[in-house]
Amino acid sequence: MKIKNIEPYVISHELDTPFYFSQWQYNTRKICLVKITLEDGTYGWGEGYGPAGVIKAGIEFFRPFLIGKKAIENEVLWQEMYRRSMDYARSGSLQAALSAIDVALWDLKGKILNMSVAVLLGGLKNPTIQPYATGLYFTRVDDLEKVLIEEAKLYKSQGFKAIKMKVGLSIEEDVKYVAAIRKAIGDDIRLMIDANHAYSYQEAIELCRKVEKYSISWFEEPVSPEDYEGYRRLRENTTIPIAGGECEYLKFGFKRLLENECVDIAQPDICASGGLTEAKRIATLAQAFNKDIVPHSWGTWIAISAAAHFVGNLDKNPGRMYNDLPTMELDRSENALRDIVTKCDLTINNGLLCVPNTPGLGVDVNMDELEKYLDKETHYNEKRFEIR
Image (tube, rainbow, N blue to C red):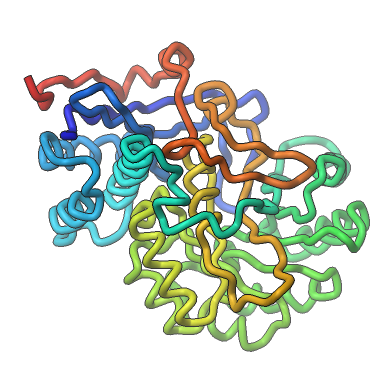
């Protein structure tokens, strides 16, 4: 079946409670979704991670090269997009546009073949996932420590066995909040920290030495994604595992990260680093370097479901009779675009996520709600590339 139309949608929502982290403040969530429709009306949904308007423009750039092509041949279409963008966009938002289209094609492929994406990736090896709760962003309140503690206790009460918190305001503040959260949740909950590349190597190693006693499961994006040497030196000089990769694109970016011994945990964002097609290759590369892989995911249920199917297919690393459950990111911050516009077949009970076995990703979009959240400034309904 051939592709009839590719429609990008930019949706946005002004947050009830703005939050911030080490780099900037979020007042609005804005996301680019893409719907690919076949001649018979079958459709699939994808999502890009990054600047929504730029991703939309990238989808529109790729669209004329894909209309009329066979949707089931996703690797052929991936190669077409990659070659069309390689000369001037080997990383960045155009690759996020490629990723959004690729995710939608996998959703379509599953519907065409009546199989879940995890099965199409090679089989559902991990039907149950133990996701970690991402939250604990900073808000402008009188007693931030109290608010963070209450949020962390909420995640624990919901059954989460791991929580990731933000750091990166200053070393003094980071240590204060890490100590408070560890005391609040106890020792049986894993705790990760994420600086969003706020620190130099010297600052990062100082923070590591001050929080090592709080049993940190990993330190995410401690230094600039450009500082491969800083990543490597930090790994050599701390007992805390180092994670990163959400700013890397394609297998080539992860090859640099892994060859330079930068991380213990590689974190590709499926909706930015090349889609599910490339994420599968990145996972194989990471395993060849004996590294764990935990995808970054910060979007709607489309992105989260793509990550769940991906993790559902991951090999055990290294594998033993009694393995720990694999993990993935589950963003818990305010997001009406996730909770109102999109819906999914994922079930999350007592901190455990079950990968759906419905065809495709097991996601859909409420078009009435999408219309309400449509970003009118960036969206238009383009029909000229449809097959007549």
